[in-house]
Image (cartoon, rainbow, N blue to C red):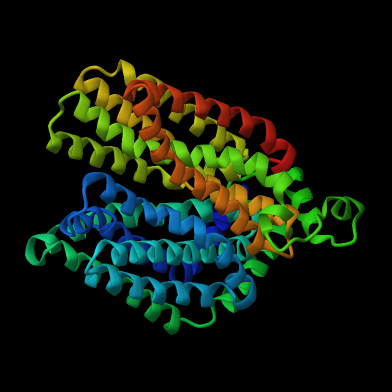
Length: 443
């Protein structure tokens, strides 16, 4: 009997996640593939417009700066017109931006186009994040969001492989058309499907009815009381606890929810900075060890495949054991990887550190989005887009800060010193996650 209930639970979970594929995961894969294809091409375009190495790096960095700038306006769009509308607007804006980059006659126009791509990416990412926060049952949330994180990894992994033959056949600037085609396909998918909110609201109600009817969760465990309390507090608008916690609304979400964001947002921002820094420091360390460029590319590719293979495991861990069991080990793993870099003085040691770093990162797929969704449900049930826009400002700022921090610390000391300092920052982030997740997230 118990075995049959477990099978029904797994079938119910698979059916629910299947309904998310077309409205959420398919557009996410397409958008990330186009973006992943053009990211390596931006510095090549800048170089072709006679930019030096430093200027090319700055223009490439404008993509992430655009994401940070676009987070708050994206929250306004999602709150006012909905997630699907925001994704459509983001896809159209990305098409226009890619064409601008393709036709850019000078560096100023290219910089504007790259910045616009980042803003469009912010709107698209926030819309799908909010979509899953609203329409996914709590006991599926981490798995659903880890799959969303996995779609980005898939797109960024596949994109450069698609760009390579295009560059060989038609030149680097033609890669921008890949992003145009990807975004046009996103628009077609979003226009062709029925209203996803109606479908997913029905599926969510069915899943919740099954769970209340005694159907075990996919982890074969009941929903923890802390998670039930989080939902109950979020759903009760007239409870004493809810009223005490309800902040004074301000026009800027960062101000409204500052007390929560400054603690959990900072910890998540450190995690994102660690993730971004590894993409910079590992290739640079390979160069310092005199590893050939082809070997560095191969090692990074293998590490990326390891990372990609683990994304669903993270969601299972979070839904079964709680968010701390993903967030804290991931930060500790990334910190240890950075701290070991100065000791990787031979190629096999370099490979081992790269693989360890990828394992740690892969086991945290979706953790930042899941934490943001949990906090939004608990502290801003009637303003989820606003809260998530403020949350993403903190986390995206960490992604933008990571490579800059590596550059600054390397200039001040050395690449090894930068690795050690980033590793120490990661340990601080792990301490903050351990301290604040039980207090603010409740699990």
